[in-house]
Picture 1 (tube, rainbow, N blue to C red):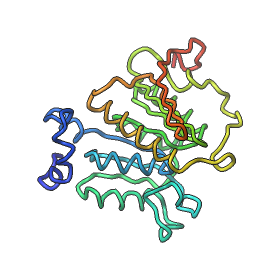
Picture 2: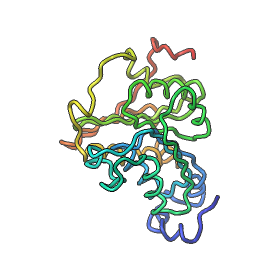
Picture 3: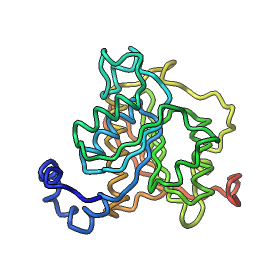
Picture 4: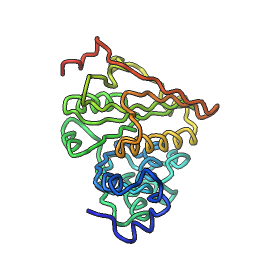
Length: 247
């Protein structure tokens, strides 16, 4: 799959940037990205990945659109209520670039279908589901898959890429919580719509940085407060007590 003349026109303002030489455009063209969760982060994330020239994208989400989604999930409208998120998202994204290859799974990711992730170059988790994040992390560690964890709540964002290709450092090293721990949720303490949007944009940039090797994002935890616009990047290391160390 190569870029058509139409696509070169669509992305012309970006492709003149110094990072988008012929080699990197080829990398962008061939990269396979899987996004799990088409909510407040997944919507802007997928929109800006497609708007940046990504063409091979797989979407996973079993939810249908609700009224409470519309304030921050920018791919959906009032007319979409009751429809599957992945189907509406796919249709919206194809309106930006009709030559994209977008695969939409209107189901939740589980142990039964998780092997679909093996085809991805980068797996991005915006699921807002701690049990699922733990499952994805374990699978990515086992199969040496690049995994980006992205979450937002209230005004606070946490994003980290785990390459899983050299020394072991994973989500479980960073957050060794028991899987049944009670975590704060967006539906109980709230989330800023802008916070979710910023999380999606920064996650998109980290993804492109990784594909094009612009910056080494591996094991860098980005902590962002969208209210005071503070950003901290913390280098994280292996936790010797991580249960996945020898997986």
